[in-house]
Length: 177
Image (cartoon, rainbow, N blue to C red; front, top):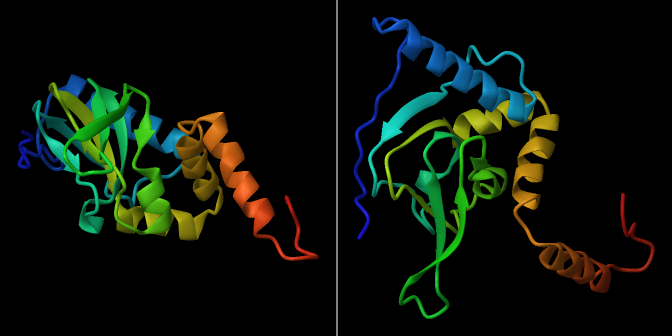
């Protein structure tokens, strides 16, 4: 059973904190934005949280949970309901340096995965609205997020997707750009 509530530690600039904590927050935000190719993240609402084990961050089929997550410490389990809905199937584990949640952020649709921690973890995350703002400001962010999604897909799935596009193209349309 997964606990759906967690304590959020929002690190706000006006609160006193230790230098090591400040460094963690700043370096985490910097690493996250480097993965997206963004140099200035001052206006973004990047949140850094320490989450306990058993925390559900994104629920499958719930659009309100969409967010882009960067794993700082610990690991997150990504699962999906089985076809009969009886249990969750573990798809992969995200480790420090991984960015997840990109598919839901790019499409604006509900996530097709559940993202949860089994053990305590530290993450940075960006809400869907801020991701949309970033994408509007710089289209290269879209490519970075898409790449984070594609690198998780197997070559078979990518080939299958390409084959479906090929079959459904009408005459005169570009096959690849």
